[in-house]
Amino acid sequence: MSSAYPSTRPKILIAGGGLVGNTLALALAARGLAVTLVEPRTAAPDQCDPADTRHLALAEGSVLALQRLGVWPALAESAGAIRRVEVSRRGAPGQLRLDAAEHGFERFGAVVPAPLLLRALDQKVADCALIEVLTGVRVEYSEAGNQLRRVMLSDGSTREVALLVAADGTDSPLRTGAAIPARVHDYQQSLISCSIRSRRVMPGSAFERLDQDGPLALLPRPDGRMGLVWTMSSGDAQARMADADGAFCAAFQERFGYRLGRLSSPGRRSLWPLRLIYAEQLHADRLVLVGNAAQTIHPIGAQGFNLGLRDALALAQCQAGRDDPGEPAVLAHYESLRRPDREQTLAWTSQLLAMRPGHSLLGPAAGLGLALVDLLPGLQRALVERAMGMAVLPWLPEAA
Ligand SMILES: Cc1cc2nc3c(=O)[nH]c(=O)nc-3n(C[C@H](O)[C@H](O)[C@H](O)COP(=O)(O)OP(=O)(O)OC[C@H]3O[C@@H](n4cnc5c(N)ncnc54)[C@H](O)[C@@H]3O)c2cc1C
Image 1 (cartoon, protein in one colour):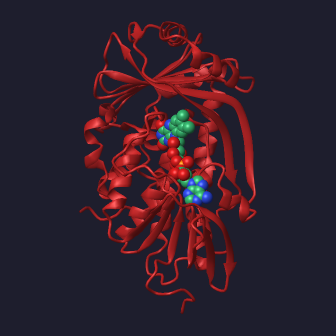
Image 2 (cartoon, protein in one colour; image 1 turned 90 degrees about the vertical axis):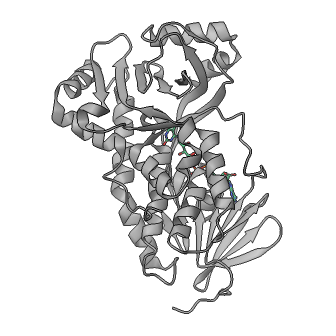
Image 3 (cartoon, protein in one colour; image 1 turned 135 degrees about the vertical axis):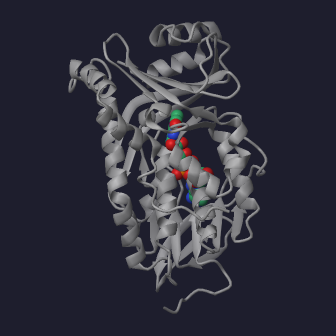
């Protein structure tokens, strides 16, 4: 199909160079496609944001994809392997223990600090000849034209592309601008993240505790510290952010228990209000949604980036053999590829949230559920496969 844009310019423009936009740019480049990536951040690719203290749990499938995209070598040393997972409910019976070795795997996945992952992606993108990166610039507005989308940038320039990808995050101005409907729910909860020291070190073990106020987790790091995740009502979270270190540790310990001995020396804390945003469709005329712009889900199941990475791989997969990256059939194919994974991950996240003690829907049955999964190998296997995210990987770049 002939195109109405200059052939010297990339046909695809990605709005948003966060974790998913960057991953998509690399996945498209791995298919030999040139892209323009527009990102308002101005930080140099070798800088990390010290205010982002999140630890992201990556499914093994995502680790494999990052390996194939050439990003993993920059992360491997800072990654904490997840070899064992223990899920419990505070003040209630029933516990689930999963061990990767018992299922024939080396690990379920790995934990990486979010700013290190972003830096590794930024650097890889900056080194890629097929990716034109515009930093310090945002997409202001876009409109559909004749077989193209016209994109207005904040530097006053205009681009005409065959496909505009909205990787512009939870509040996605592009999703709103295209009038794509989305389900929205404010959990009235916030999450505090930081690192912490535990007296007892259990390398490779991740712990999740379902508390009435929200889930808590301690995630493995390779340096003997752990990544702390603590969800609670937004009002309580504001107060906890202001706590002195000792009071913060004591309050967390009261909920988490002494499984890892005394907890101390918390690092810098960051606060994350939690919302659900779930786009009811993934494309409009020559515009497509990926990552948090498509779905922002509760981090209880540690699935947000894992899902967004699979969005990126699926969109790259759909470009096989296509001259026009934004033609309706390509975007419809992408939407149909992503539907089952998105729906199942959202349902799984809701089930985990419903397992909190005191939740009106499941109550004591939740403890029974955990115990049953613990006892029944078939259920365990299904859970392991979901957590590892291998079966749902849409496509992988060739090994280098
Ligand atoms: C506390 C917490 C813990 C989490 N833990 C996990 C976990 O363990 N595992 C996991 O898989 N996921 C986890 N997630 C989810 C994960 O962090 C997100 O799903 C992921 O970061 C989404 O990346 P994104 O690129 O889609 O969005 P973002 O990271 O929000 O990036 C959007 C980008 O778009 C840019 N932008 C905005 N507007 C414009 C515009 N107009 N033009 C151009 N660019 C624009 C922004 O500058 C930004 O860089 C967690 C999330 C939170 C909050």
